[in-house]
Image 1 (cartoon, rainbow over the protein chains, first blue to last red):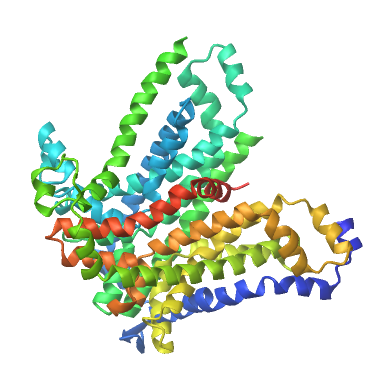
Image 2: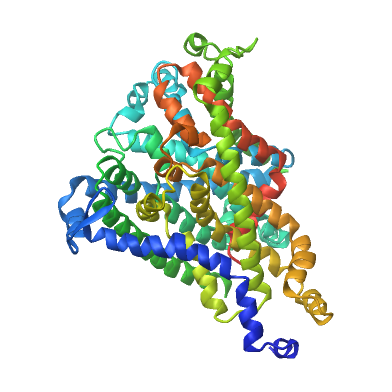
Length: 302
Length: 274
């Protein structure tokens, strides 16, 4: 603080400092704040094309939540998918990280293999997985029929009972490498002495994981759970290219419903109301998770 | 020596998982250079000698040359803008003392929480009013907003590692803010800036939701959009589709393989809160 005054920070100086933030703030004003504000306006109006025709108050919101079976279905699917995805993708990432950290050789190879799907365009991931699930030449039905698993022998993406979980396969394939990477950095940061001390005290491998590694990885778990939740609640591209929300809305997510309503049925005001509901859900879930996880993180570090 | 058996057991599991992870990519690349009939008839055959007909045909029929050019254009523009905005913002937030710094930091992070899906409808209507539909610079601006917060977060992490004394000393010697930024901060944070550039490039290259809404004429389609349309149009010709997919998948994969170091490091630095 003393130093700050000694360099001399008058109001004028600090105003000049602010100049470096202005370009960013200008972009955010035009492409974030304005669309949000206009989105709010759209959501309380009936629309024709993109023109406002009639003020309807909260009608769109009420109709979406109370009277729109497709939207309710998409809400349920989105939350179900997000809940399962968070658990599986962090679990799988942790498993991969522990296994890779254990390797004496070839770590880079495994890192690259597991992380590579993350850089492949989601639209291509979706198309490739569609083929993996395709009857006659996709590997999943092939393996399914070899093992005699009925649900896998036909076309998992075309069956309303399995379609959402087939997409989960593609999701895990794309994102497990990212969670692995984050956990791996955490594991490497754990001082070796902790583990050695636990070995001296006679702790087995699983015990060491449970009482040393897992608690020390809490900041990583915290971040990953939060980020996966935020990212998955808005899942769009993978679903859009594999099933488009079908069959018969079995894989409809909030984002696919918003796109379909706005750009296929051209009901822009109503679609924006759904988008605002999505925003509120994301914000509140983020706050709740942050509170819960942060308390736990505080308990670990103290 | 009990550790030894564990290591072996875990390598087996890890290698099995690696095969599962590799299979979709290898299969796609192999099928891209097989005849359509062989994709069904001989799924396990090594594609040798390679059949390159599908690659050429996918390239011309899917107008992938045009689409890749468009993608390169949008990506270059987005990366440049994101770097300018995020470098100067991260500099102000970590090494200068603008008023309301804490609040501004939160404002800059806001796009991380607001998903594109919430902005896309009003943005579409704004772009329509401004005549920006089918405009690649217009698309680039939406991509900038999607990446700029993430970039700033990563860069603040790197900038904080630069000792304040180095900067103060230069300031006392009379160097202005911009000189300090360009002569001291940017060179010292170079690895971080490279990582950000590559990450933003890959994210922008892969974006699908934005182009899907904001681009309508096929001549301005980006690569993911072109391949999405292509895969639907030629869904029955798997050989052709696989070839098109391979063409679109390979550039980001190559970028990743070449720059894997800064890629992986940039992500780990950026994702975990400090």
